[in-house]
Structure formats: structure tokens, C-alpha cells
Image (cartoon, rainbow, N blue to C red; front, side, top):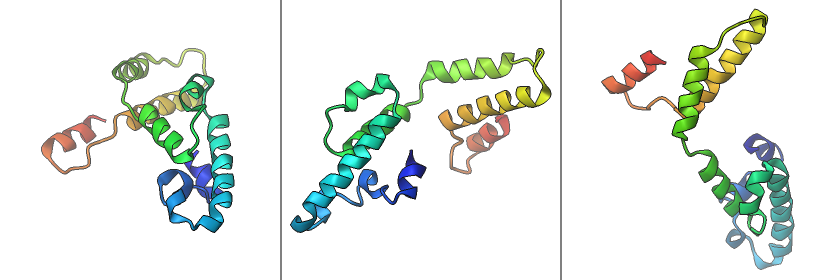
Amino acid sequence: MRVALLGRNKLGMVDGTCGKDKFPDSMENHWECVNAIVLSWLMNSVAKGLLGGIMYASIAQTVWEDLVEKVNKVDGSRTFNLHKEIATLTQGSASVSVYFSKLKDLWEEFEALVPAPGCDCPKSRDFVNYL
């Protein structure tokens, strides 16, 4: 979604750089129109289960921040299940390319949920080596 907003030059509507208070009163209607467009894009892009929490919001930035908070939480059970899936994945009757693609997708999701630490301390190096 971030890439889609960036491509349409609308990322500022959700990251706070194009807040309503930064525009003159004469452009208030234009800001409202763009905000409504971004809100509709967000609402049409999320799973139906997430719509309840954002359906009545009137500012795209608020919806975005709420979605980021929900999505960025590391769910311990999900990381455990991913780790288990990676460890128990077998090729079976699938082709090597299908098996490798599935394994690579699992690795990428795991790395997205559990990012490597950004420091150069010994624990960080151990973690990177572990990955």
C-alpha cells in the first residue's frame, strides 16, 4: 500500500507531511477531497476483519497509524508457527522450484516479523549468524 500511495504522490496524506493544518484555508476543500480518496483506497485494501476499526475514521493519517500499529505487532504465536513451518516443510511431490518458493516466502515473512537487530554488538552478530 505504501508503494501505491508513493506512486500516486499521496504518501504525505498518511505520513503526516500533508496534514490539513499545513494547507491554507482556501485549499481546505481540495485537502478533504484527496483525504477521502486516500481513505477509500485504504478501506478497499484491507481485510474485511480490519474494517470495523477504521470504518468511521475521517482522516487518512489516523487510519494509517492504526493499521501500522495493528500490523507491526510481532505476534509470538505467528513467529512460532512460522518457525515450525520452516522446520517441518518437505518437498513431497512438489517441484524443486515450488518447494524453494514456499520456503523462501516463509523465510521472508519470518525475517519481516523478527528483524535483525541494528547494532554491532555480539548478540546482534550471533543473531545474524543464526539466521
